Image (tube, rainbow, N blue to C red; front, side, top):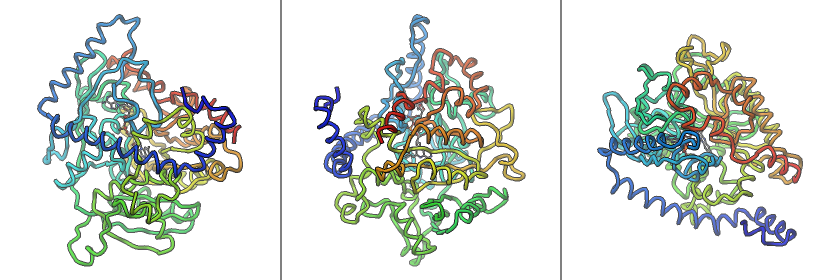
Length: 544
Ligand SMILES: Cc1cc2nc3c(=O)[nH]c(=O)nc-3n(C[C@H](O)[C@H](O)[C@H](O)COP(=O)(O)OP(=O)(O)OC[C@H]3O[C@@H](n4cnc5c(N)ncnc54)[C@H](O)[C@@H]3O)c2cc1C
């Protein structure tokens, strides 16, 4: 029972209003310290796991144990057994949804080890629960990083593989899935297969990304690595005018010319419809006193939040600096892009940063762990968290639509190749349309539109905002232009609309062929929000 329910309705309403109005204070006084204790406990546990329990040589034995458990599930009465999922608690996942794992048969997939680094083949073999934080800590001192490294340190290599991964290096190599050399998967019948792009399981290989654990249990994967230098030379280019910054992004990403010289990293933060700062990053050495004077450790606790630092270049003009690579890769971690501003409005004040900045960000796992039904409803009714894959051809249109529907800035943009693998290598993404293909290449240039924040009318406590209407209008646009919603976030799609957005033909074939029917939930069942977002969203809209 929710303790608020014990209060008289009038008092309950006033108390909730007070908590909402003073959210920053409540978060600083209670949430941050509690999150710190929670995080310390979790980090100690992870350290224990990494150092004392780490045993890469026991990988095969651990996989056999998973196979045995799946075998036991197969011996249950077929009529009454429930589909399987991993036993990893929902609160550890970065997804905003809470899949009802209690309705499934849970199998522990406790695989946390980095297994092998092969610098000749330029691949690293890992178990699925290795996090971005773990792998960057391991690879960077050795002179490498993953070809696609997400900015959030708690994301797991396995979660990114079976969900989606896309970063500011993706205009060079495409999605995370393009950098996966092999997947080791325990299937619904308990057998173990290795799927690569050209072996007898290539049909499975192409359907595993965006499958969210509905085709099997991932037990290991090989990922491409790239050589790096220890710094990123970052150029900040402020641009006024929407057409100007959109054109510049198309040009810099190579969307117009497949032979264009590409920067290593590329992104833009759009601060309002007509102002953006484009960030162009290249691997660099810091080998002169002039360069050393320009080094900026952007992730240190007392430093301004990264996007606030970026915003200053709108007034200061074009500039550059050198960012240590790990700082660069995790630059958005401390302010969770700009999500933290809606939680702690004064969190970027220098005094706050100096004394309490080290407590930030509140751990995503802690936030999820303490989510009540009311807070869960707020995550999609009074806030927006969406990453959307769209073709570069609709860049201007999508920014205008995002402003109309959500009225929130900043907005994140970074380009990504979407490859056309041909009709015999189909996955859940469709081949880019002919007008989206980069001239002469086998890929189209798409981008991630990241919209995170509080919609204008909710922020101003004035005006009308209906999350259902806004989200469904955005999803209709995504379907119309051949884009995709990231499935870690809440979707408002009906199953029919979902099937229209994604190409599920090869996936459905793979489910039959690889014993997933009945053994694992279907994709739509797995990723749709566990609550009725349409009903709750409409109720909240009325209340505004
Ligand atoms: C504010 C914010 C911004 C974000 N921005 C980006 C972005 O720019 N780019 C980007 O790519 N992502 C972004 N994300 C998405 C986020 O990083 C994803 O959720 C990520 O894909 C993986 O998270 P995870 O490791 O918690 O995976 P999980 O959520 O744990 O896993 C993903 C799915 O795979 C299943 N699964 C995981 N491991 C296994 C296994 N071993 N066997 C079987 N099934 C398994 C899970 O059940 C789940 O369905 C953002 C998220 C947030 C909150």
